[in-house]
Every structure is written in C-alpha cells, then in structure tokens.
Image 1: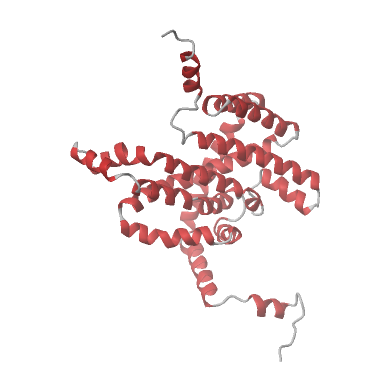
Image 2: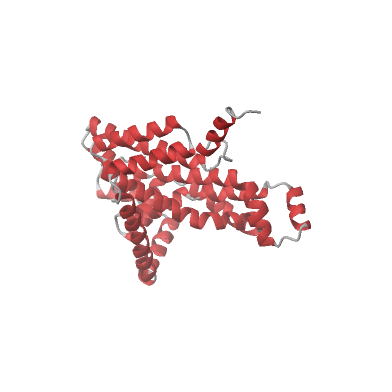
Length: 307
C-alpha cells in the first residue's frame, strides 16, 4: 500500500522529481560544456550583447514622435493609410502609458532574435531543399524544437549564459527558428519543374538557378516563414522576462506577480500594438507590389489620363 508523502518535504520532492537516466545524461552534458566550452559561450555572450546594444541604440536614437512618424510612413508606403493611422495612434498610446522604453527594449530583443534565427534558418532551409539527407537530419530536430514546451528552453539557456538578455535571445532563437526553415524548404521544393528546366536550358549554374529561379519563385512562402518567425519571437516576450529579458514582458510579469490588473493590461496592450505593427509590415514584404503607395498612386493617376 502506497503511503502519502508530506507535501513540500525534501524526501517527497526528491522521490517525485528526481531525474532519470536521460536527465542525468543531459546534466552531465551541461556540466561538460560549462567545463570545457566556457570560452565559446563567453564569445557568444559578447557577440549577442553587442547586437542587442546596437539594435537598442539605433531604435532609441530618434525621438518618440519621430520614430512614430517613421513607422507610420513605412505603413503608408507598404500597407495602407488606415494602418499608418493605427501605427501613429498606437505608438503614441504606448508613449502616453509610459511604456516607451520597455517597448524599445522588447523591439530590440525581438529584432535581434529574429535576425539570428533568419541568419541560421534561411541557409538551413536552402540546404534542406537541395539535399534530402540534410532534411532527414533536420526534420526530427525541428519537430522537437516546435513541440518542446517553451519554458524548457529557459533551463539550459540560464545554465550556460546566466540571466539577462542573452539567454532570453538564445531561447527565443531556438523557439522561433523552425518556421523559416520549414517554409524555406517547402517554397524551394515547390518551384515548378518547367522553371527549373528552363533555367538549366539557358545555362544557369546551380548557384544562379537558386538565386535567379528558385528564390524569386519561392519568395512569398519564404517571407511567410519570416513573418511567422518574427511573431513567434514576440510571443516569447513574457516568458523571456522570467530570466531577465526585460521590456514589456517584465511589465506584464509584474502585473501578474502583484495581481495588478491595470499594469498587466497596459503591458498587454503595448505588446498587441507592437505585434500588429510588426505583423503587417512583415506581411507587406510578401506582396508583389500591388498595395504599395507607388502602385496605388499609379492607379490613381491612371484614372485621370486621357485616352
């Protein structure tokens, strides 16, 4: 007959939560990395910190009103006038709530993690499309990365890089990279065979075939992967704040910890505004030019032309 163990007792915790053979092997691997590869982690830490600092400095350089005007101008050019007005009003609302600096920190974190994820993911997607052996190797890894709970990424990130922005970016990178790899591979594999044959008939090398035939044809699918990577990176904001990521996630986390509904709501609204702006601007890169300001102005001018 089983005997109930006292809740919170040391023996009960150890009996329930003691790691098995696989967990002990992972612990041993982490200890080995910390012992023999600390120099590599120091280099990665310094490089990522430099990227974050550069991104945050660049984003914080313009005054809030000019930053809002720049984003609204991009929205008018790439999306629509309605979106430009939303971006202008939304960013001013963030400023009025006193969350401008946390928003800039969050944006720097998201852009840095997305840049690193694309820097690694796009070449992996191209290799996966062109080499079936690479795809067979990567596919189970991508399945693991997408199905593993996001909180699990925080444990090795903290153990290897301590706390702060760097482990938050590393965890976000791992969480957000799979879509761009998968969709890049899918887009290139779906390029019609007649286009490939035409490119080869005109004497294209394999590299020219990739950049002049496959990538232009697969661009909408690839940009969809870029959009999903950026959105997944932003979705890690609150989780990354638990290990010192800072930004708007820290505001939401403080609202949860203090049961302050107003503070949590303001942080959530700021995250939503930032998410909509990033989503619409990145989605506009998938368009073929029909909705840009230049295309709309050409259509408007064509209405006044005489036959």
